[in-house]
Image (cartoon, rainbow, N blue to C red; front, side, top):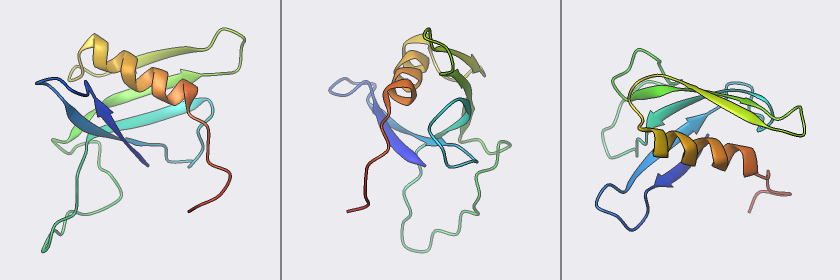
Length: 99
């Protein structure tokens, strides 16, 4: 799970949470949710539920070829935000270690 800020420095700035059930950042399906920050007394169940009102859609990433591609399945993210999420996943490098 990764939190990504979309449209930084604009009036429409907000965060999304990107989840991959396999825990990998290679080819595959990624679920996108409105970012949810735990607060005192918060009892929101995990794992993420695609029936939640916070579910924004799914992005399918294919990194296998020299020409990576992506496809968004959903209707809640505008095209520019879909592209921001997809480009983040395509460019993401897993850290060498946890700090």
